[in-house]
Length: 140
Image 1 (cartoon, rainbow, N blue to C red):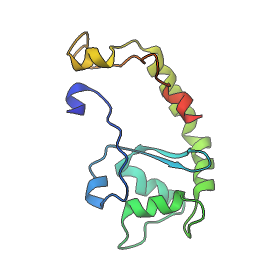
Image 2 (image 1 turned 90 degrees about the vertical axis):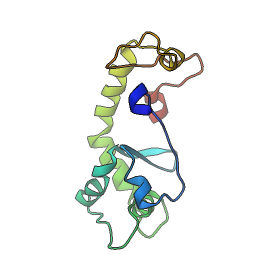
Image 3 (image 1 turned 120 degrees about the vertical axis):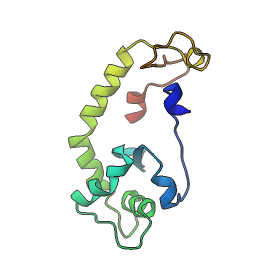
């Protein structure tokens, strides 16, 4: 449904099974103190991203548990500081640029999209409502 209507669905799942996480298109990983981003990209590439940073998934471990352990301060596998630093140096700028572009592109409201209103067949970009925070503000 989300692909058909060109809308985003955000899901938070506590302790997801491997089979569930494999169904996700995109993964956004945050660590605490306060909500610092460590990864934003394809779910299918998350393990290789971590491995390239020196954090190889142990055999017979749920990938979601492993990723959570590496971004949870105080755990044995905590690598949150280095992952935040790498993200800030290598991914954050591109995400800010993409957000700026998306925010400058007019689109339909969510209600118009749901009602099949003024949305072309290839792309619907919802406008922010009066109470919404833009994505870039949420990143900061």
